[in-house]
Length: 411
Image 1 (cartoon, rainbow, N blue to C red):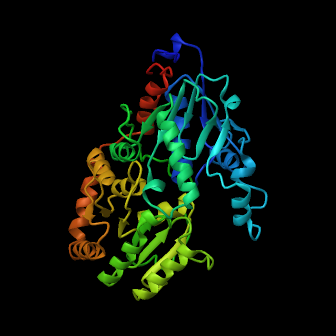
Image 2: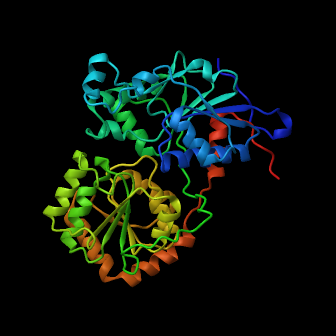
Image 3: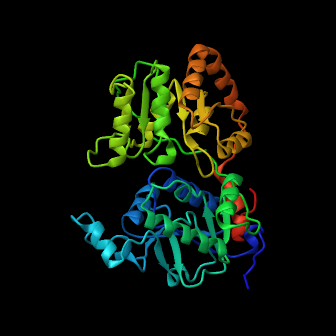
């Protein structure tokens, strides 16, 4: 039976311990979500918070949090199978297959979760608990993108992710979703499930302490900004084709992991370079591919953008960049998909919508923005103060209820 604890002022209960378990620690949105949440959970509850991770992922959290939150390194039970020592050696992929080593998930030791009052897996993706899931476990399912879009990961990893998600949904854990759109996808893939809480995210991130002083070759011109990665669901082909069909009257600046397109061995990067060449786009004139940037550089780029474009075919809880651009009064073009519509309604965002699978429609919307740019920019500026703001403390308070943590008394 699950232990219950009333959500009452801190003076009524002693301090408790919340373990936050993440063995992936994706740079960018993944780590950012966890960092914002652990800080907020410490502010709004009486709980102490500790992160459980391993290796480079644990190091990433230590660097990000600067010792503010303890990070405990606990080796997963299948460490050699997840990251075998021969990784990168010629023939390693075949060797992994022959030895049965290509696990996609991390087996988290149940013993690592003992002695706490609650456990939270902020990304249930790629995590399994070895043994029974403890009663006081909460896990967040952000999306089913890997399952919906073949080719993001190898097929064996896709099957592994499907089984991991199925186990979480069938377990005693309280599974939280970040959007109703993802609930609908999970119900379609795994069958109608019991009622699940939906806790939308915030996009209120701390700005870098030091502004970027970096100069860009396009810095004196208007530019269209797209923060993304190379995953197929990010839909870069449609963006490139739409840009070309419009005539690339404003250059496109693409940033995010892998987007420098410099890896000659990457099939995905070769594919995108072919699209660029076939569409007659000229790198350094029509297109600037920057790769991953630190926050200070990215936010400086965002501040100076002519507009932001997000061509994605799917997201989890929405798009941080859309909200951040709207907050700064920058026009946004967004793919017209359910999760983005849900986010826009929640935040009172009014982007220029386009059909995510129709490059011609994107070209039309770019022409519409270009032809009435002053009006669109003014509308974006007027929209900024009308956003329905949601802080990370708001998100943490909703999680605290699900986690059954004690909320601090209001000051």
